[in-house]
Length: 72
Image 1: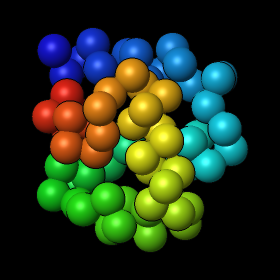
Image 2 (image 1 turned 90 degrees about the vertical axis):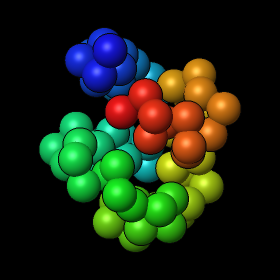
Image 3 (image 1 turned 30 degrees about the horizontal axis):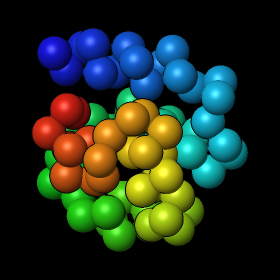
Image 4 (image 1 turned 120 degrees about the horizontal axis):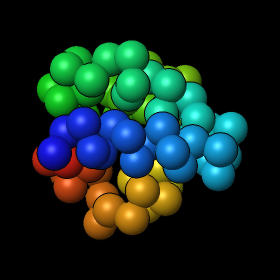
């Protein structure tokens, strides 16, 4: 299942905003670390606002950050 979610991030990549692409890049390169990060930690690591991380989750058709971490 994890591979499917990573694939869907990659296939949706071109429709992301600039901030969402930063989040996607970080997630794809640091899958394991992201699992232990809060939404604020991830936002800081990506140098975006936590709203951008939440928007990334919504763009991926998820309810929010918790569901994102479960999918990952």
